[in-house]
Length: 97
Image (cartoon, rainbow, N blue to C red; front, side, top):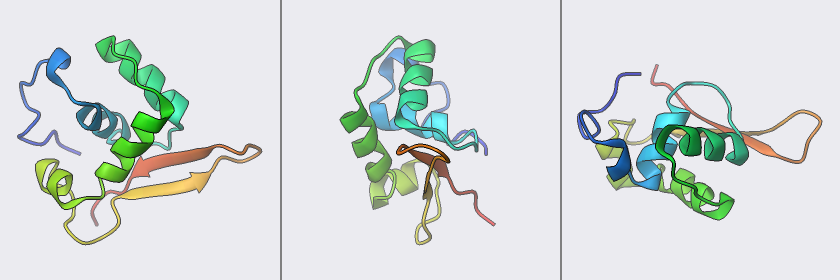
């Protein structure tokens, strides 16, 4: 996935939580809230709680972020599954076909 024009050149300290969650999930692998949280903290030094990350994932499904991040306007953009052997869920961005 290419970086959307809205994020090109944006400094790390100016990234919103939704920007940060998008950048984590665009890598294409399933991630839990805690993995997303750690990746954001490692890359930006910012800490966001699980409820904030959950809200950002839900926000990716809305019209504004879909156009900002150049996601498909109608199809599901975030896939969710239960992690095997755990009660945790994992999330990933669905690539366009």
